[in-house]
Image 1 (cartoon, rainbow, N blue to C red):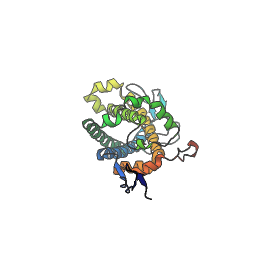
Image 2: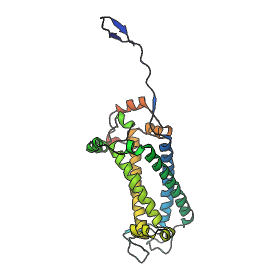
Image 3: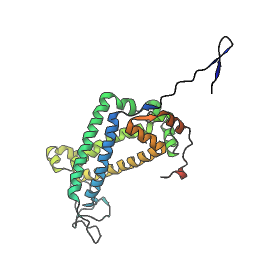
Image 4: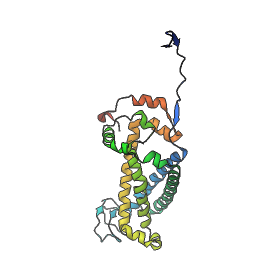
Length: 272
């Protein structure tokens, strides 16, 4: 319908229909989307192959050496694919070490190359400084952000265009701490790497410590992935997935979503 607005002379003038708002706006660059999905595929391949490798010896030790005659700090109590490992089960799993190790190494190099591309791009373009490093005001509001996430509250409209403080801190931890530690511990398990860089293996605590740290960091990354997916669902799965695939967000859909009430915890069926 048409509206009328008063003017200085005391009369009225009909307001012209406003121009339609821009339906979509850019959210993620092509590099962010490319590295996101390459890392996702590589990580899933690493999880699958890594699980098979663990089954060859589902026990973990600290230090340089560890074997069936050494007391482990962690015994997963899983059946093994090696008959030399005392698991207590009356059977041995099929040995899948061949393809699993090959896939693990190939996926690892894909993940490393993708990470280096993202790191160099982020440093040269200022992506980390602009989008990930939290400001002082962001840090002051961290308690409120934590409570909102625990209540599974719908994100505000502004959250669709930038990362909240918890996302920023978590992404920085994953990118600059967990991923480097994963790469370091993975390389430190290699005897070839040990021969070329013995100090790097010594600093991490030995081959078995590297294997244990590799496993623990994997657990942390799996937890991160689970929370990440849950928050994507809570925040609006279609909009978030569309943004990471096409790079754009529907501004009207975001506005409608921001006005919806929060999903009660008990009614939730199951981020960015």
